[in-house]
Image 1 (spheres, helix red, strand yellow):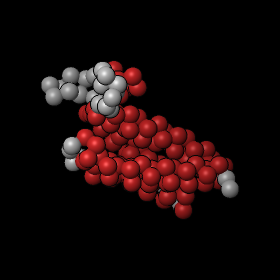
Image 2 (cartoon, helix red, strand yellow; image 1 turned 135 degrees about the vertical axis):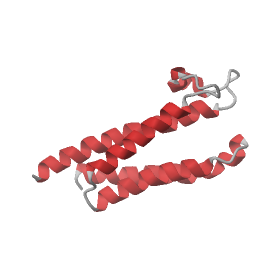
Image 3 (spheres, one colour; image 1 turned 90 degrees about the horizontal axis):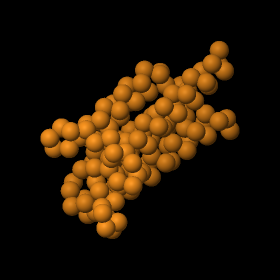
Image 4 (cartoon, helix red, strand yellow; image 1 turned 60 degrees about the vertical axis):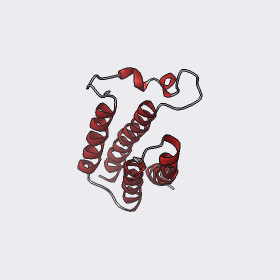
Length: 133
């Protein structure tokens, strides 16, 4: 199996599992935004599955990357619109007592995972397209 196929297969499985795990969000945090994460992770799984089956246009990957970057910037704002770059620091993922995850920082981490994967996906896609030429 080629490296791109392995990468896309891993992404399909990884993000499908992430989407499945989001079903506990309502009980864990007492809110009901799990559907947002199911869609985000599900779409990432779908992009990887599509890439596994056929070459996707890079435009789709760039739109996905732009969307996730914009979502991250939006998510890192508080209710007054102040940007909190410190929410990207994994030490901020837990409350001061260390007993519960803080939702805003936790979600920022999820978006960072999506962004990093989108960048890697673009790199793998471009490299594999060059080999086909």
